[in-house]
Length: 281
Ligand SMILES: Cc1cc2nc3c(=O)[nH]c(=O)nc-3n(C[C@H](O)[C@H](O)[C@H](O)COP(=O)(O)OP(=O)(O)OC[C@H]3O[C@@H](n4cnc5c(N)ncnc54)[C@H](O)[C@@H]3O)c2cc1C
Image (tube, rainbow, N blue to C red):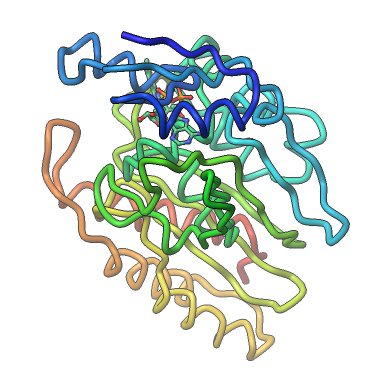
């Protein structure tokens, strides 16, 4: 086995095409579980831990935020980044334990592409773009086109996820999840709700209730139409929003939960987050 402790993106990209069986590892919190359970035997390993340019974030001139794929959750939980992206901070705080949040990265969440990944509904609701780089060049893929199935995405074997760009959205944003306990838990159902004050429109993304992250277009359209009426928000409207959100889910029954409970839980989350965004008459 060859282990490359890369220190630059360029080194990573060369390793991806030159090694016979390269496997990227960032925090290792997903990959090492696979190895420990015997589900994966890495051929060659390319470590991203020392690639500094992946472990940073910055604000662009247009107010959008770029987050490097190697930035650990710990950095997203508090400080300036948490103020800019509160929903991402909330999601980051729910990931595993402090040890997992010190090592785990958004790039790894994207690389694994589990529908239960806590970062992913936030990227969906905030209309993030994923940056992919190979020796052939760069491309940016809207998150809505990135995930194609359970643990499947459009990144090619020679591509590195370098980060995400999250456009600026003024207004309420929040993330919540349901699990079998209050901490150290993979989501049974999760939701990210955003109210864009500039356009007075909402966005809702659901996690762990379908093979990919779901954007609830019908629920969004319904609530947008209600908001356009400029009347006080009511319980009746939020109940209809919740029901439409649940209809977008395509949950399964597995070792974590039943499909029925997942559908119920995601509806509760959708309503709860929307209720926090508006004063209900
Ligand atoms: C105890 C425990 C608790 C956990 N709890 C949660 C939780 O609550 N919520 C949650 O969402 N997840 C949880 N996880 C899963 C994991 O921590 C996250 O998915 C995390 O984001 C993975 O990041 P990583 O950097 O450790 O990924 P790694 O394990 O290093 O990599 C994961 C996959 O992504 C690929 N990859 C990594 N970086 C890149 C890149 N830059 N470009 C392309 N491919 C890349 C790797 O090749 C690998 O296939 C938990 C894991 C453990 C062990």
